[in-house]
Image (cartoon, rainbow, N blue to C red):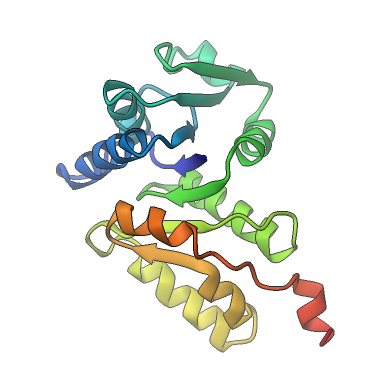
Length: 191
């Protein structure tokens, strides 16, 4: 199994996000789960990859050439795919992964998360998607998703398909229980 982890190019404030990334990397490696991530050596991305590698895990990075040119690629990963752009990066990360996990991060992390979330709604994949809610980081976004559902822009089935937990072990256990909702257009038309 391989899990694609979306996370930041910075480490955020304090040690909590760094510690969470380290714990996720170690936990994936200890469970024999391969890591697919954005291929950078900096931020929580670098912490995550380094932790997985130290624990004997397999790490696959996917990074655009423009970021390799800026010398932020992690050269110590097991498998580094250099792609043309961010679009190709997301497509390759998605194709290599069996599940997705978003750690706290910035706009890029959210953009990656929402793309795979949208793909799931459209029936383009049926892979589980989870958020690691470190110190309530994702609570404001979850309230907004509840608002979207309440206003009729997000079906409750899709809001509920996001696995949210504070413990990565619990997230990994819940991946096995994942039941994708029916494809969006089937739900819209009552089929």
